[in-house]
Length: 251
Ligand code: 8X3
Image 1 (cartoon, protein in one colour):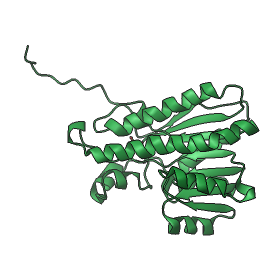
Image 2 (cartoon, protein in one colour; image 1 turned 135 degrees about the vertical axis):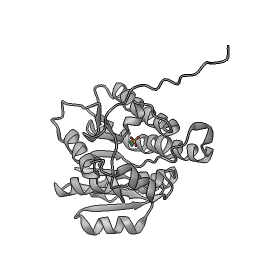
Image 3 (tube, helix red, strand yellow; image 1 turned 45 degrees about the horizontal axis):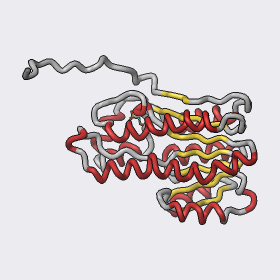
Image 4 (cartoon, protein in one colour; image 1 turned 180 degrees about the horizontal axis):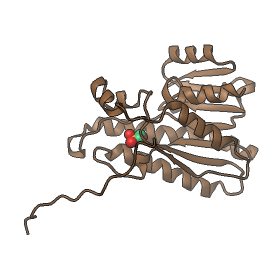
């Protein structure tokens, strides 16, 4: 199969590329950082790299129209690129951070899906994977736009399922909880390593390889099975009671 992975240079994306490559599949790896893509290319056998900003639709169009023959029929699109910026309360957030999350998590994800989906429908075969989050279902303080962007992703996937009835194209939203060993939290905390370390300390968080395994599983199930959403958390993570703020409100 040909597997197109966005955000493939590190973390989840890199682990997903390696998992599929291990089974002999061809990888198209897209990310901004060329050197990292080149190092991935050295690690796996059949890998075509696209150094491109996922927000650049013209760039995406160009690269998609110049894929080598063996890579033109994309069987799986893994919409992995995405980010969280900040964990402040909404009234204290930087608006530019909100815009950037919307640009990458929503606009870029829909852009690449829009470019690749028609060829899958035409061939009556293919699987679109998105990386959602538990934050798209469960609100938490500081989740504001990040969680909302992942709620978009979840609903987009379900709506795609409705549109794709009868096309044989499958769509799945993978929704991880706390996951370490990627740049996710370092980006979210803007390089504050102390915050990252205290978040993951003794947490037994999910690892990129766990996410890759989940994706490998949903995409290799018999063709008549479509996993719509797959929510996974580390066993150590669970739910807390709803918050009740107690004070006498002015009447
Ligand atoms: C990442 C999971 O719990 O940090 O999407 O929101 S969480």
